[in-house]
Length: 115
Image (cartoon, rainbow, N blue to C red):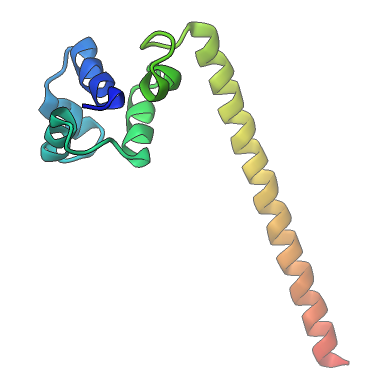
């Protein structure tokens, strides 16, 4: 069984939840988890993202690479939250700029049609 599979199963033990509850919380079928447990399949990126979203204290480094501890330290959580907020703000700025650009392109297109 690949190491990431072992870490997913270890995480379930650490969280003290049943496989059914874990699967339900990250919105996967229990059979997917069974295949991971048996080593038949590896967890995909989407599953890893769901785990990290549902359990924000879990360390991505530990889950993906096996480095560090299963839980992030508090300062990492604060830094991650700040980065998420900045990323969200940046996304809003980009969306606004894209809308402005599209509006200006439409105005130019309309002017060219009139010419």
